[in-house]
Length: 377
Image 1: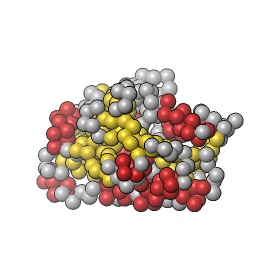
Image 2: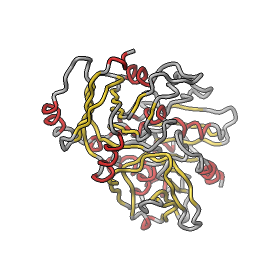
Image 3: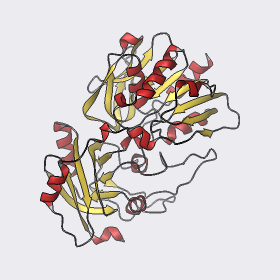
Image 4: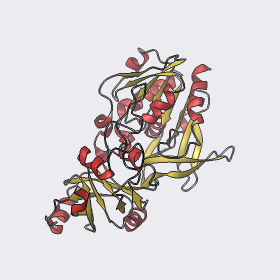
């Protein structure tokens, strides 16, 4: 197998520090924002295909990855991929401590290495991911390069050090444009009770699954759909999805959210959607030092003091949205950053985490039912 040929690989940080390992997946050089996630080894398939990782090189802190292989690209009866959060790997590169060579699972059809090869994504193993994570946690996320060479090639460290200085911040790009659907898609259950329009800024498939299995007809629309176009579809409610990048760039989505609030349309936001709604309410966004990425992040309701364990993947956050009629719905228990907002008298709320999980805990699935209650009332 190709991963046994020990191809040299380098993870180069923008300040010139580098880590040497063994390459797997595609032999190529990529650039991006280096981030880490504390998701366990049971969740790498979903992590790889999460559109919110567009433009990033992802370090997994779990020591062994790939032990149950990768399943087939099967779809359910609604046409949604069963096991993947999008139709391809979305991150730029993958950094792990050890790649399992002999996975075991009855649904596995290929190894993690073969999956990255098929998707033309480079990976590196035998990196000290703990050391990388400590750097990112103490100093903040960094831009960088991941280079996987062919067997026998020798990395040129000085050349990489010069190249890494020119890496551009992916958050300056309109990343939602790169991952959003290009056309309207419909997912229809046998007995729909309501119709929901999902504004696709990089939606995860499990959000669609959770809506459809609750007998909601889902109309997925591109990132640049206007409020007028959305209303022409006659939805009972609108969901603004998760996605990658800086929320302040997405002017159209912010304007759509503002119109939804003004028009009293039942609206739910998830992750990036939370930031979009917060900005529409007059708040401002800011970048977290190293982001919240993992499946064990605790949030608390400041009014009830009830806690939830959540799945998270975001590098930006929102604040100062109270002047728009909103109040804080949930708060991060580690750094007190916002984890949810809700309007005081309009049917609009949002959460900064991922209630659909995939991967992660299922504590917050009730929020989809809350959304239905808003539409019905």
